[in-house]
Length: 169
Image 1: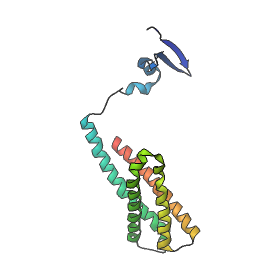
Image 2: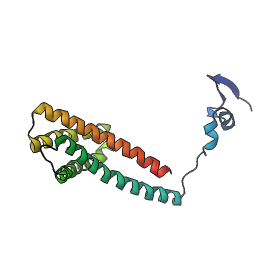
Image 3: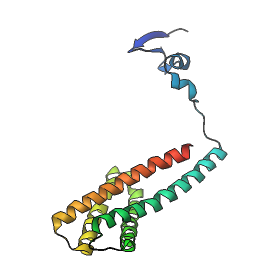
Image 4: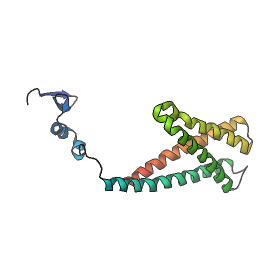
């Protein structure tokens, strides 16, 4: 082919032809490239199957994360409030606020990414809610708020990873 030259780029040989990569050359040096199909859209059946699996996984994540939040809150505050149900109600309040913030910020976040940072507002809400419920010193309340908020975020990440593996199976 005219205008085609071969170059070595750190062990990856690439044929350059008018700015496009030659897929045979890439496939010979990058093994995982062979397994990928180029320009293939999912069929309607595949999209429906994925949507169904995603909805099942999403429901599991939402309910499980509220229960795990209530468990973490109970572990932190079981002396002040020994009943798990009270912590579960608090978890439902917190997650309701969090979802309301997410719903309100979803449209403006498409226009300006600064709206994605509204989850910090959920942390502030949690700080004041814990203070109002348990009446602790502010620094103890702040430490427990940070611990719970980090726990929530790590739980969401872990459950999201588990859901991705569940859908992948």
